[in-house]
Image (cartoon, rainbow, N blue to C red; front, side, top):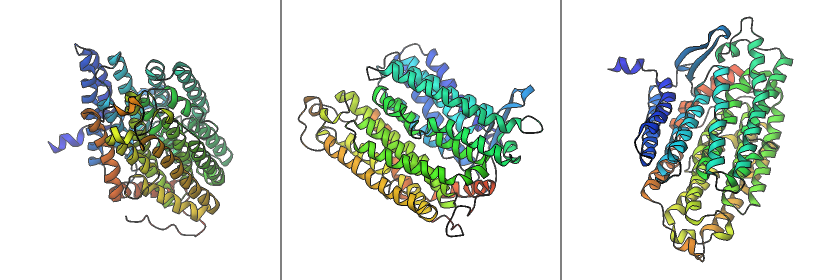
Length: 506
């Protein structure tokens, strides 16, 4: 039995479960059962991702649990999947967030079969991005994420301009795909024999000038989805017009940042380390701009969207340090944002359903009538601020430590962004959730329903568990980050203190 389990293609199974769930949704006899089929599928996918972690050996070098099937044999393109310590944690964070969204969805959802089919299709595409170690298969999954998001926003958005928001998002993502495709093709075409699998691409270093071209193309392509200023305009619009639960998925799961870590920097390590000042500069701009923009908002959803831009800046600062602390912190912070930002927007979706708005002028006194919802939103917000005891703290602390050592000025700017972060979140939270419930829609609203409490328990439990005891996350990522830095050739390259200290024990 153990031998059979070890032979099970877990990564392929992880991709196939959501796709099989789509078939199950369309085979059920009644529309109301579609949600139950989606919930079952998402829970099974979450279980499969946890099984991947159980089978993973953090001490083993390189990619593990690899699956590969020919796709376009003439061009040496394969459906090739693999996972290492960098991509590993993105799997449970992604599947947990999707499970929370499906569990908390209303049973009376309009066009339920289509809605949940698009959600599961999006989950399969996102997981493909994290698992793909063939550049063309990665690009296929990357582009496939655009299709379900377009229809989810256009058909189930809450704003009057939802179709324009869906079109804007789609066009920007397709435009960003052009430099991304060229950035992935150039290394493959530079090989003596055409190949697209990531280990082969990384084993053949490019010339220095070619690396600069590839890095800038990939930075632009991934920067659109990250999002990096000034390519961030789609996110606040999407947050205001789109279905809030779907926005929680889009804003919480940082595919652009993962692309930078997995492809952009390793493919062009010399260019990336030479341009550390560019990464740090963009990180400072994003961190400060996102925090200041969030400070000026009067809508909870838009505030969280701009807070996400600020968080992206902090992750870039960690990567720009090219140190053990900084890169490991960047990975942990990116993963924790799926819980903090995604959970906050999911809470906003609960509020939107009850009150019909997330504008401050229509809120006030939410804590009186909906204490559980208010407590969950507060937990997610504090995790986004990096409060000790929440999942956001380990990554944010490591990023700050590394940035102060390698780019002191940028580190001070990051501290300022964190101060602004406390100001924008606590200010809006006080206005929206405290005080008397003067508006009838707020005063008479029901608190979290049982299905919503299950979703809250999943996300809130993960935030607290990995905030109070983050050591397993550090152990799972430490060896992979060390190997990543060695492959990039950047250990100590940008540090001002010479040696890179080992990752701390919390």
